[in-house]
Image (tube, rainbow, N blue to C red; front, side):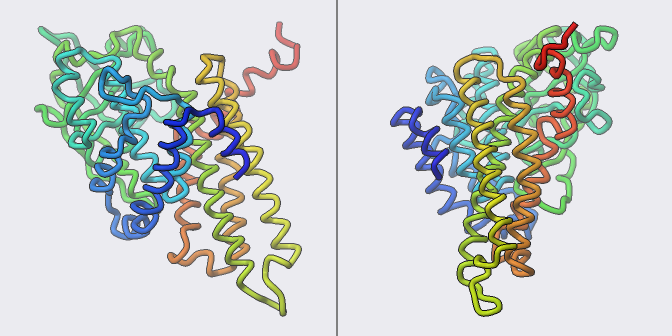
Length: 390
């Protein structure tokens, strides 16, 4: 569509080629298998590894570590294309990508040299370790503890709602070193599943999105050596927030991808299906709903691509990312449902991906800040935006 071409024009030839390869990979490897993954509640590790072999987990990874060192906008477009086939797969893969890049950037050289090659080929899957059973969006209230001991840290606590937790071998996890310090006491550690004290929980049974591999783990007197510290106390909270604008922008892009795929399916179906002697698409009530959907898609992409450009340029993307995340997730829930409605009861059949996309949009509405959190983020800025700040 026009706006994707508009963003792609600013990408380098190498980046545009990678986006095209992502589109082809999704069509060949993800779309034909996504429904089966869902019915079987299967984490598609074999396809994740195939994506790693192509390099989709190395987009932002620095060249010195074997990555491509490409732009955030390129990553966003790659995973927008992936999400057209399946949000859960795309989200699992991008979380592994992010873990690779963060571990390589912040880890100790010897530690990185030992584990990163295995992460690059998909032998060790990465995940983030923020959310906890009793602590959702209140990141400053983490309950996992890290106690200083000889040669490292002893960690205790649990993580929940973690993408890739079903199989992850390395977690970029956050823990509180001193509760009295609040968010200033938070540190970040590279947690290895193969070490003593790591206990993986069973993957969560969901109503959709099982390819995301969401679950949790517990640490019981887990020893993290000094080399496993990615961000020391006082810097962990800041490091976690540094990537949140990017996460909100690429989740918004994935919502755009899902809606575009849903529109393509609905328009094709309503052109072919006839009722009362004419194609369903020619009924004004149906046609106008799809017109509203494609209009919202264009608006969401403008907000999303603006946030991506700001991130690449090093600008202040806090509000831009919040606008994009709020609007794209909210409109995707409504407009994908409208696409299903346009197809009647057939829109619910597993032959079509729309119900899966609707579940993906609902997952997106929670990840990296809910719609309600975006409202609060934007609401705090209202006085400054409209010149009434005191």
